[in-house]
Image 1: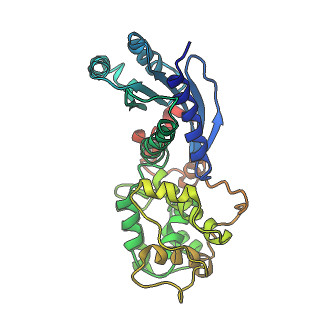
Image 2: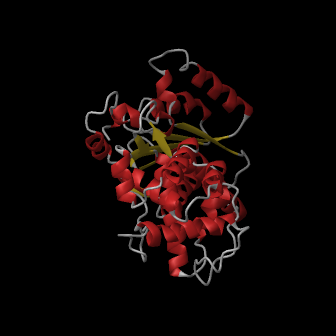
Image 3: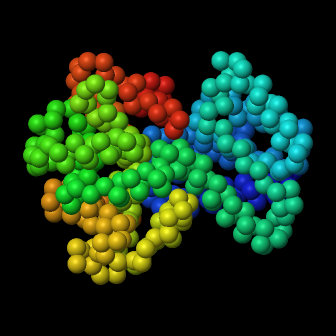
Amino acid sequence: MASPEHQAIAETINEVLEDLAGSALVGVFEGQRRTFDYGCLLSRDLERPLVAQVLWQHGHGLEKDIRTLLFDSEALIKLYIVRDSTRVRATLDDVIASYRPDSDTRPKLTGLKLIFVPPDFDADRGQDRIWLRSFLGLSFSQDIAFGIAFGGFTKHALNVFMDHGGPIGLKYAVLHEIAENGLIHTPTFKDRLGYKTDGPIREAITMLNAAGFVRRMSGGVLCFPTIRGRFLLDLTRRLLVDVHNARGWSIQTTRLLECLGIVLPEFPVDGISSESIQPSDKFAGNLLHATFCKDHFGRDLLADIDLRKPVLYSQFLIEHFIKEAGIARGFSADFFSEPEYLFNPTTTGH
């Protein structure tokens, strides 16, 4: 029979992931647990099956747990939450090290996330349960959300984007067009933007490529979105939804940005306008770019979004971009592969 601590951790995993889903930036759907303590599907760009196993009392089961997690043929993300101790860490190091030298077993370590809970955690103490919720929430946000599902999105990357100037709204319009159709043919790209000046477009694309929001094909003009770039658009939509609903920054928005070390500025109760933005407030200035993207370039970032119950993510339709690219020399689905974020179209079928 599972201990109260084991049960509390398994329950909290579900609570934390459901809370993450409340941001509308990722979907969490019920999955088959099979032999695991928890299982779900994370939906963002593609569906990533996630399983979790908890080890609390029976240390002798550690090696079997790791083997079961690593050799699960369906799960992309494998969480192992264990009661911390020197012995457990030493055993884990030995077990994991045994998989690294073999080229056949090394890839199975991809997606494995270890989380250590202090050994004196007591499920019967209310303050310990509160701490566990906060601890797992922070860990999941950093390791699973920002570390995998959001494409390794960082505060530095966001700052690079916010520091970029140019015509108001253009950087969002450029990113939006690349996220929708890619950049295949420069004249067509400029026609879709309704903007003909080369310099600002080139500068915006250079910035987006340097920050990892788009990926440019070496030696060519072809440019396509990354998982990180798609997330930037959706995170901006999350902020715009908050502003539109005029109830203040949502709890989920605040928690997510706190994980990046970002404290949200005062909520713009009077909306976003050039008159209400202080030149020194680059965060609010960036929202001005997002808002005027619609007025200046016809790109409404909230188009087709249900503002009462938003869903701010979608599937990465690689087939669409391959069709757009046509028979471009040297181009294939491998171009989109981002294995560090468990996104490989040649193996996932997306």
